Image 1: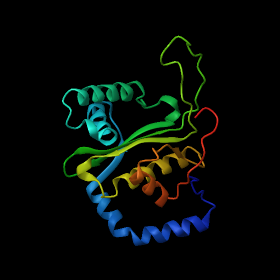
Image 2: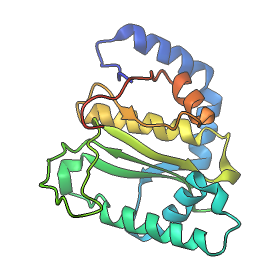
Image 3: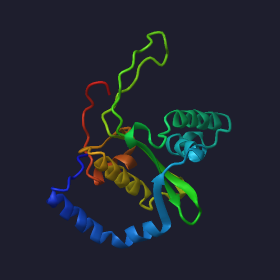
Length: 199
């Protein structure tokens, strides 16, 4: 999706009209939730949230679900955007319920410029995926908090951060079977593109 610049007044007018319509819901959202950078100490909760969001079929599996949570935790820890690194071009965002003081939503925005690494042809993990940047991923919301505007708010915050990084577009990937996510992104102005290059 192209992110409107300050000079695109027509887009700003449309956004302003949408904001006027949604003022009461926006104020309610701000009273109930906070979007902020994730803390390292929250990664266990986030790993569980990501597992529930992307692997709901494991919810009732007492053996495979904990394994998947550990795999997600390992991935999140290895990729954690420590403050001051990468010139603030990579962030984990969480949505926190003010009432419960718990993390109820998560996403990752990564605008780091990928550096091609020498690949080991003998490693089973030899291939690396290079995505366009900034890349927005791992958007998930606690099932008990869905349909409250959390996903949209996280996407909008990702767009704001991308704009702050002087990025004109933001990319994401969605499974073609995920109609809920496809509808969300379509309603927010995202377009389907055909992947090219390394992706």
